[in-house]
Image 1 (cartoon, one colour):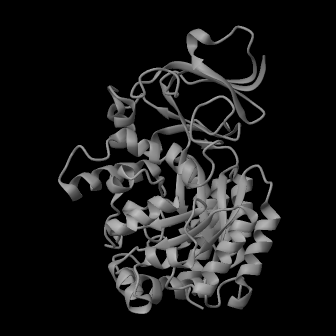
Image 2: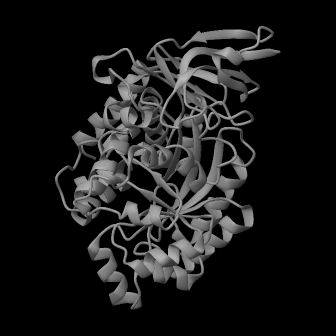
Image 3: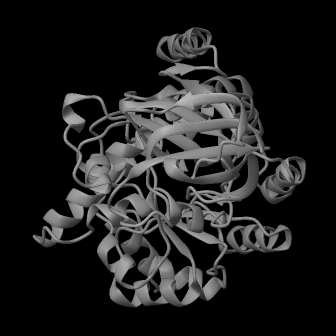
Length: 439
């Protein structure tokens, strides 16, 4: 059997290779962007003839991590307005900076910088939402990064959409352009119930239903947002969206920090997915999402970094460790959210939230070949007793040495193969100089 790429001698953890907590020496064969065969080394047939072979000895072969929430172009604002309350951060710093500096050029180069950071740290799929998202999708495509790219919708003049009355039509044009792409899955992103009217939310959701794409929305991120929702609508943010009829399996709710048990029950019944951004919520002191309750209620859960403006890093390994540890300390229960469940949130869980469960998230024949290799020959990763525990509590993004997306080798031995990193860093630093110097 011919194949494009063969990974051999690495430690694998696949659904059909025994103990899910242990990895065994194995191989993965890739053909036409898909996993064509995988299993223990003893099952590697002599007849497999690869065009390229990667010897993964000393490495752990995993499905690529899935970052379910990002605003990639906001890498420009990394460190711009730290240590501030969310609303002050947004209204006094981020929104004004966006109004002045968000351009197609900024979104393209800063999106490409984010793509580089994510690929280098083991992320192979990102869900992104922003303005000029077409330019970000182009940057992702060139980098070889898989993305669910969502055009941002908001009820005031925004970059690229000066007339809010045109935001749904603009989103429809974006979706129509990118439908059918093998790496970019288009979607729609309403910013939040407090920046989008009921009409905008329902029209955006109707568009998402018509074209069968994801509908993203920030929800219940802060206590103030919940109080504001009760003041305006006499309903919690979750009940408000339920009343608008926009909760279903295609809806992805971002943050979901301030929920009560009734809210959680509504989400469960609707089939909507939830994305938690632990580090962003920590940094902005928004609170902590009840991840353990989501898991108990079988709600699809993914993890996201949020943007560099509110997290400062796009490392999903860090996101996993903080999600696990925060849940434990919040309930004073060290047994909550064991490592295996958190790894699932960053792989199969994230795939389910994004509607890609049959395509990515597992090392399984027929799935897209989105694969990373973690270098185990490091002091902080020695010894390895249990795979998931090592990944969540000891590993970091810098331990990833190889990334393959859609069967394409995009990073090998820590070297990016699809991005001219010095050029990208130079372009973003020039944009940052303009930002610092003012109008």
